[in-house]
Length: 179
Ligand code: S3P
Image (cartoon, rainbow, N blue to C red; front, side):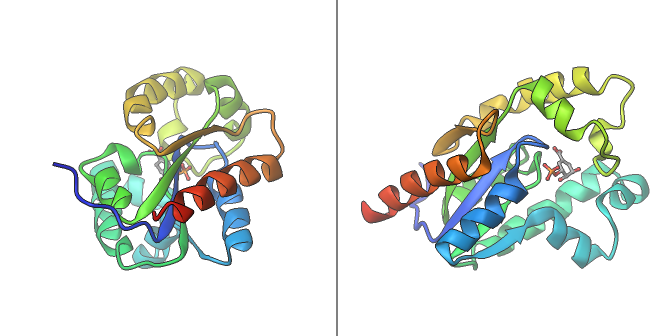
């Protein structure tokens, strides 16, 4: 049985480079909500960058830190939460977030994601000889999780303000129906 939902937050999920942080900050401004980025929270709590955590402790340790943070997120109210790309695809993270947040997935094609992230060095999972192939592979594995969002929104070829307006419309509609 799925747990009952009490929607007090808005969570953004989706692959790296789909615009979760940019869109999330804009949404928080419009809604007058707090903004929280799970990667930033993990970095400040650990006193290390994400690549340092991956290099020194490994991905499994990083996923444990994500899991711990997810358990704390249920205490949040009126917060837009931008999640790391892999967070909703591990354990029961997505189920836990759905209990208190309306979940929006930002979507883009592998080619667009590649163009957006190709010059970044802070994403350990894409430090790979074939980053586009890796993006395709990970996206295919993660798609079933991303598709469980309440709303799936393409962030491709559209100005951020249009994406934000679309999400606000759906979110406020949902809230007016009683969460
Ligand atoms: C990851 C995405 C990153 C960060 C880490 C792992 C992933 O976050 O959490 O590098 O597994 O997709 P962004 O989606 O914000 O880049």
